[in-house]
Amino acid sequence: MPKYSPEDIYLSELRPATQAIRGGYLSYAESHSEPLYLTSSFVFESARQAADRFNGSEPGNIYSRFTNPTVRIFEERLAGLECAESCVATSSGMAAVLAIIFTFLKSGDEIVCSRSVFGATLVMFNNLQKFGIRTRFVSQTDVGEWEAAVNASTKLLFLETPSNPLCEIGDIRNLAKISNRVGALLVVDNCLCTPALQVPLRLGADLVIHSATKYLDGQGRCIGGAICGAKALIQQVHANLRSAGFSMSPFNAWVFLKGLETLGIRMEAHSRNARTVAEWLSDHPSIQRVYYPGLISHPQYDLAAEQQSEFGGILSFSVRGARDEAWRLIDNTRLLSITANLGDTKTTITHPATTTHSRLTKEEKISAGISENLVRLSVGLEDVRDILNDLEIAFEAV
Ligand SMILES: *Cc1c(COP(=O)(O)O)cnc(C)c1O
Image 1 (cartoon, rainbow, N blue to C red):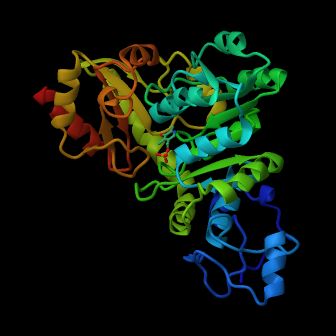
Image 2 (cartoon, rainbow, N blue to C red; image 1 turned 135 degrees about the vertical axis):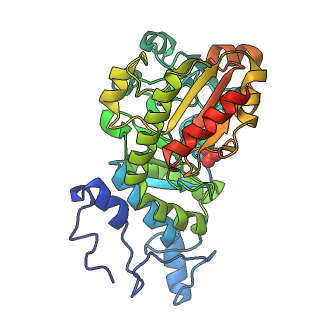
Image 3 (cartoon, rainbow, N blue to C red; image 1 turned 120 degrees about the vertical axis):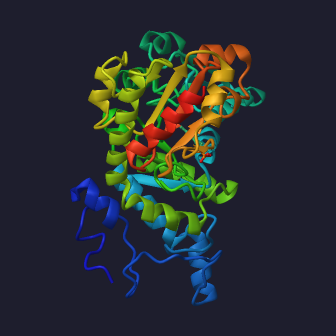
């Protein structure tokens, strides 16, 4: 049994590194590691207790579609890290986006969304037209465009900062002013930074979403997501979870929970390696341009430095040439993994135009800046000299 209980310890008093390891309370007998409740349902002592659990007069678990103790520890721990009152875990990052739409929007409402969001988010928002929900896409970096796009029907402002793959930075504080003025929710996808590097709720965001699949897991094993924010908002999402079923599996929650324990030191190490790779690429003759917010040459270096404590593990670069040269570079790496995932201990290399962003039309790709010669790296935790060596050998082959 832990020596503390929710009554005698306030999670907000724990520093982040401690919160990541100790946050989330469960009375779990003698097990030092958080137990995995791999069960679909929970038993009741009597018919009376079953009735009371169902009618809500007695708190407690009923069925893992809506509550599970292992999922609960993950939610509490992540909420603490995001400085949120509450958190709800979802089956994937995209399920988290869908849950927000399903909960807070209706026909006739509008979304204002950065053009630089994750490919599947763009596709989903476009598909909402058939439900009478319109999305206006704007520049991630031009606050004036957001200002011009909002109106009385706007219910959601949505962005991801830094963006994937171009690492554009959104100005969370100024966008929060716009969303407050029109009474809309500002939602930030904090996938690339994680709370270890950036806490959007502190900068004025209303909700933070995660693809836990990426850095929260950190080792590329499970799919999952989460939404963090004020209790009053998260309760509404949770009520929908019960009927819509976008829930996180307890096994995945257990994996993410253990991932959170090393999040801080992993994000520091990812950032350190990525900065070294970005600087090395900047000096490379085969490179046209490097996109990494930690480079002084990045147009929003100052904003990134203000919002984030470090610059993260994702960077992109354009090679001299076109798709052929980008593909040849990718194919000639031997150590790096050719895969679309990011946030893994293993460095991954991706051609966004033909993979993560392939469902965009040619015009959408151009406006999102996804060129054919663009390559994305998710810099892992290998010795950075081996990462550079593998890239150098691949460049020589191109
Ligand atoms: C991967 C990703 C998502 C989607 O998450 P899934 O867990 O794959 O559904 C959303 N946003 C960003 C920034 C991502 O990288």
